Amino acid sequence: QVQLVESGGGLVQPGGSLRLSCAASRSIDSFYAMKWYRQAPGKQRELVAAVTSGGSTVYADSVKGRFTISRDNAKNTVYLQMSSLKPEDTAVYYCNAEALRNYWGQGTQVTVSS
Image (cartoon, rainbow, N blue to C red; front, side, top):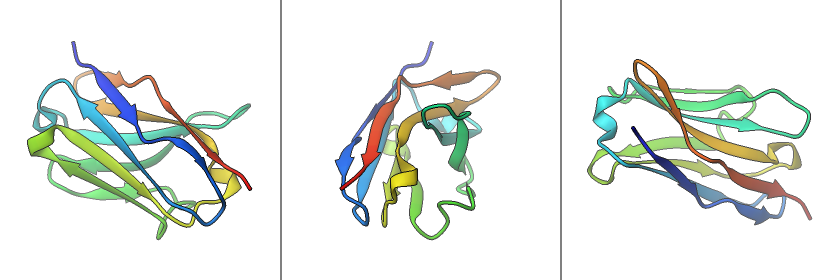
């Protein structure tokens, strides 16, 4: 069993920044990819960003140029640096680890509002 614990969410004004962290209970090298998803009220969960074990990254069009995903294998942690935040970025953000099965964290709330 794998535990993923997200942190770093909160309330931020439009244009502000936040950094989310996802700490895994075992080596993230064992996963094919680490991903961040988000789910806004009344909407489906969507992929925000992903980073593979080889370091390749992919981003949703809506966050390109504003968000950066990174991984620290030594700390078994994945980060999502979010800048130039917009009200439409408000959602619960979930960490996902992809292997033969998917593992999910409990989510962290991000609210962008003035």
